[in-house]
Length: 391
Image 1 (cartoon, helix red, strand yellow):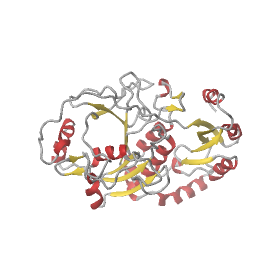
Image 2: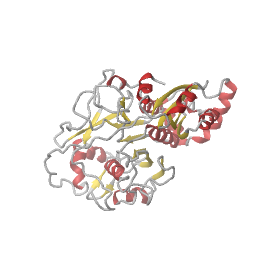
Image 3: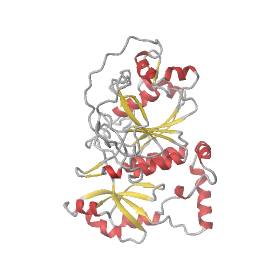
Image 4: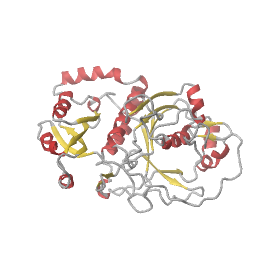
């Protein structure tokens, strides 16, 4: 258990429950025969598309040690101590639990436990108001009010060449989605929404459900999905409006808009198994329980669990795009996993191409320039979840 985390916990009641990652020393497989046998059994867990995508980036075995399951007896031993299992990550060889502080020492001395780390959260900073010019008159009857933001990054020219996301599988990871919005009508009519999963409530519906979700739970995801993949002729087009989509609901909104790392990592592994080519995530992680936080030095591309998972996904051939955060304009104000070294960290600009005042900046803790990409993040035209026809 890191000394800084022990110090933080010392001021808390011993019966208070905390969320932690427990990392394991091994996966319970110690010989080549068992390894090959287990790897063979895993082949059915990955879609053909997933294996085809991996083949573009991996030389040799498409399924490797990181794909092996976490050893279930290790998990059961921790549950016996009273810990509530949250998520399991085969990539990290770890599992996240909610457990009382007084049980952590008992867990830490188990022979198969490597380390215990806190589950981090990010409190989304509100966007600061910026005065921007009004939208220009319609320049395209097809793109409508979305034309300006698309033209800024040369999307209409790319569409003219025939590139509109067709055949690409995009995983949207966010708060949930207003699936019956008109912006997504074409995607559903054409059978391009292939799967969805709610990692908060553990069901297969990412739209708000009565008695389960806050009224604004699916708002942010509706905005981001429509910006990327919406399609309403004469009103809104996303750059990848003909892509295929899988939807992951990972952010829990009501509690101070706190986002759990473990849901995000689970969503990444789910997306990989289904063959996602691209993962789009406007989420991030930084602060823990009003005090414990990643330091600037730890935003180094190698510390946060989401950063490690993002780099693993990239090594498997997935293009991971993640928001820089809304904590600018100071230096090294980015959030994790935007600090990962093999993904696209995305910042925000206004209609004039100037970095938005709220958009987080690099460099990373180890001195790398961030972000890699910027696009319209002020006065962006997109679908809202107020009703099924609102933009």
